[in-house]
Image 1 (tube, helix red, strand yellow):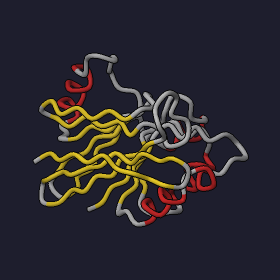
Image 2: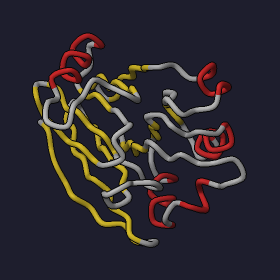
Image 3: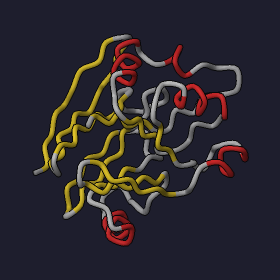
Image 4: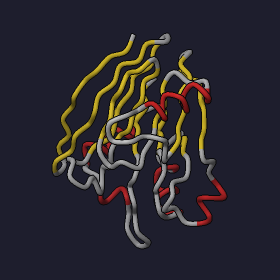
Length: 176
């Protein structure tokens, strides 16, 4: 099963996420089985655009409008091909120590914990796989990014999708 992971899109009222995303990334999203968003859509319109593309699993972030705070949970757990995947926006991570997120993942009973808030991709494998997709729209000092996960029979393979203009490239990793 193919999952595409986004976070921190920060789309303002009147903007269209699909117009701002690279064309390659929109195509990748449309061809995925599940789209995961780890919060900070900002607007209900952004959420609705993504929900219109297929199955969307999402949590609210700390800058989302009140309607999204009410609609979406703070954290969520799904099971994909025998792998428990948790989603949260703002976890307990400092720049040099993922222990807080590891403990949170154990508390949630997940094998993979997806989080946002940092605007740059993070991949850490400490008993659980910790993933932050970065931001495809407002990456700060990083390149625009998202994550693609392939989960099949309990195995996780993934790629960080880096986007420049309308072209995307990949950095691959695997967890058995």
